Image 1 (cartoon, rainbow, N blue to C red):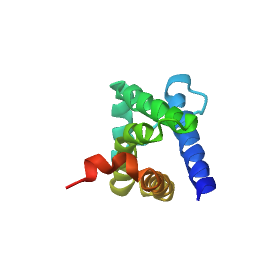
Image 2: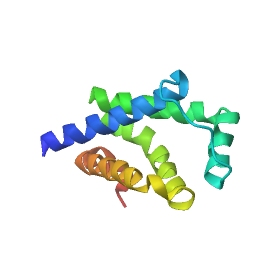
Image 3: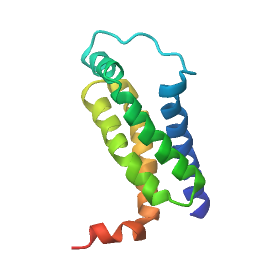
Length: 124
């Protein structure tokens, strides 16, 4: 189970560091956004520069997962982003739903593996 935890942590960390860094460094080319609700939503994120705040949370959370020392803190940074990714793909763009589900499953698995760190907020 320890190996599965490391694999999940590294995969999730790399995904968020790479795609979060892309907002700042633009190394993955992006086509223009279509005139759909999903495209308009993404366009609003970029035009308002809100995407930089989201990307910063992605990079910080991803780096914390990769370092492996503060995994629960990294998950706290990433969970709001993951929820928004899931909701975006559920309501606006179904094509990315399988990848969003994989990201969610990896994050939930890591939360479960580090459940002792979250015990304080889950106590009744």
